Length: 402
Image (cartoon, rainbow, N blue to C red; front, top):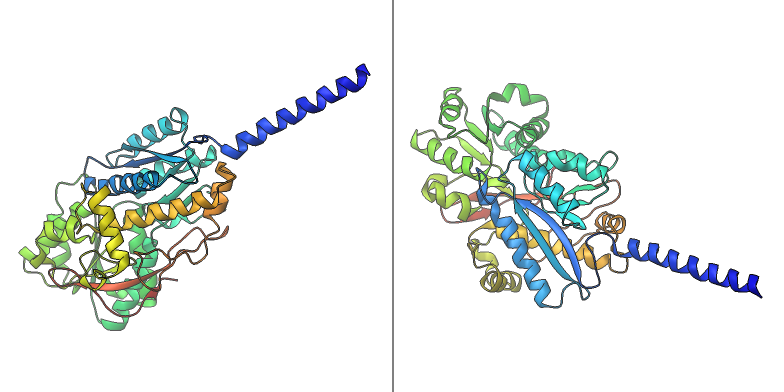
């Protein structure tokens, strides 16, 4: 009898131990019955402060989700900290978010240099680094960094699209490139070279880099103009984009101008540069630009605008970054809802790698989000567009950068 009682008590103890362990896995760090803590860094100050719109807009989207009851009853606690686009500051802030705030995951962290600074740390600690707001090729490396996933079309994808378009429409072009001196800028240049193929060495006649701490890029623009280039590609952040657009216009240089999607917001860049100075610039997109009137009678745009007016009043309705943030947050919510029942870090990462043709309201027609365990690049297609002084006008077909 005593042996039977001992065995029964042992079995109950083991069951409770297993249940406790299972419950810990079930919830994961940063998750309770009422809360999901998500970490983020954004440059609310510093040379890339216009990207602060992303953090503010994502916070606004999660506020709307919380007002609607949260994600299966759990409210999202979105903790976003300023890193000033400085990699050492990013690392410091992220370490605090993981070790002190005990967030479940990092979401939407901004910029190639900041994300590079935290990639190994997060992977070593098996913390999801999801839907990075940067398009470096290295975010799609599930073999070596299985906890890191991008979201934007990669910079090489976009660069290849520009290269192919130039090769077809300007086969005799002399190309100059202004790029940021890091993986961000170099990926654009690599993509352009791949898109041009065997003619790259012949067609690219000048390249100039800049540092984010440079006060201006006037000297780089002067050097590129003196090369005799007929085409300019600028792979830049918003502040530098506005400077470059103004300088190219003011010196009377009239190249066919390609501007990276990282800096084509009407509200954050084109109006700052002077809309008349950007007429004719070509860029690429994958989302519905909020200044393009063709979308403004659609229910998708009206829903976005209603959210902007109620939850995101600190952001300008002409700022495309508020559209991208809306889509980013929708993707994150989709993954968290799919993970319900097992909100462990492992399962959240598995769900993020199992998206199939996810269509979001403010993505362009024909562009969806897909991932797999072997492919961490969610968006692979873009469409070219041209600035007319007021808005961007889409043209041509949706193109793949593969």
